[in-house]
Image 1 (cartoon, helix red, strand yellow):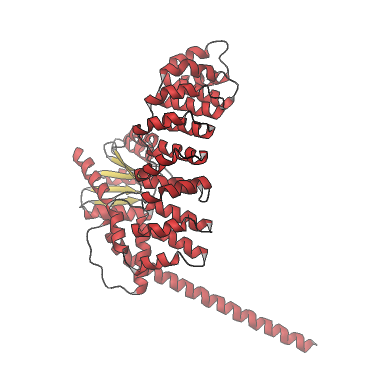
Image 2 (spheres, one colour):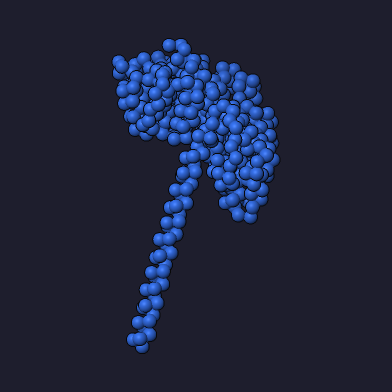
Length: 128
Length: 335
């Protein structure tokens, strides 16, 4: 886990270090602070500890998948209001629907456009 | 005699010691090289990230090994991105010696080198590689063909879609790779796919019809409805599945008719598709199919009724001639 300090804080969870680096780089360039987690359990723990403004969560992760992470964030009162954007390689309707059912606010398909991701983060934070 | 044996033993011991020293030295050299590469990669990583995901950056003067490492790092990041980031990757590689070297390597006599080149060219994102990759799709080595197909998909090469469908049907490229490559090409592949849906070869028609279910839209309904009456059962089944995937309400009549098909897997896909379309008029016919002997098609019909009209399913399951599939679907519905 690593944290860079400058608000607003975005938590990014993915087990792929290349994606973590790309998302972190783009979001930091867009003026966000970024905390990273490499699995679902760490993401849930960090969300509770750091209270990020938003979480970007990969669907396919070890220990807890992105749907389960979203559900757990929604269940805990201190993390229930954190907006979640899911990163998914599975863009099939059923998976997207499952993400929304779990409480996700938006989803982005992988491979992804870093600029689009940054714009979506801004849009979701702007809605709140 | 003993003296000779002693000399031989000493010689063997000396050789073994020499061999061990050489192994240790080699291992040390490899470890040093690995450390050097890791340090180089860590140093160039921010530059690679900036080039792929960042704003415009000025490229510093780099040594040959640094350029090679940067190309490797950008290529790996390129697999994760799309849109403007891919365009930045393409702009970086266009006209570079690294890109030209990979194009040349497609003609290398070693298959592994050709395969690596075909793979890297997809990561480099330059559309100029398309003609060479199309040639590589006919390479004598299976790994080269697979890498070329994957890269053509990553390049979104619409002009390659016909060749990719043919490779899919001929099994010259593993099905999953060819299928994925065509999906990666996306809607640019549609023109070729639609053309192949009318090909005289039933295998090509079947593959094209299946792809239309993934890539097509409502404008493909008429073509798919015609395909439900195709002479080939494989085409009929895949056309039914495609209509279901597109949730085509216009296809409901053809799908209901397909429940009378003589081939069970056509009936199976028609039943599933009617479940997706939500066609209530087909429920009586689906209930009849749910009582037939063929397990797969009967099960699919019962599941379809559960989706389309749960009350009708529960009512049918209560009758004495319901059969196992209606009972099971009704039990699942109650759960």
